[in-house]
Image: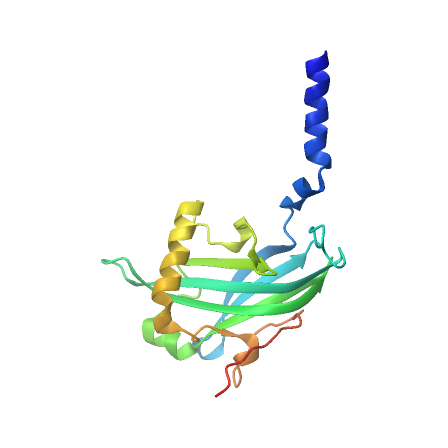
Length: 198
């Protein structure tokens, strides 16, 4: 009887421990979608929702700040060699409130799409979300279905980081894109812009 009581107390302590509840992610990736636009441009749409701030030291549990959203894309260039072109881009959202739904958009130029004969949907994609410098756990809705486990995901991210320099700044966030049809756009968050200045 004593051992049973101790086991029940131990289990309750795990569930009632505030640190055990931090497993909840502050920002949820609800959906990732790719759309073909006029003049062959490709729009990447990332739907996010804010679950609130689970950190005990949070200034206010209803607000999440310093949210970075990084997109990783890979399009197969050569079937025989299994060679890929990688594109990455990142934005920072200033703040989201619990219950907020916001969308982040990235764009791939039509001439790149036309030159390389790219399909609208990439062969691989992943959306990494970090809050206050700490990466959240990978979410199923944030990655393509052909990334079945963490090992393949980590390999994909490493290759994209290593080989994506050739296409640096080609995948553009919405606020750096102009003079094109932006497609359907809604519920933009407040972005923190750190544009490069000469």
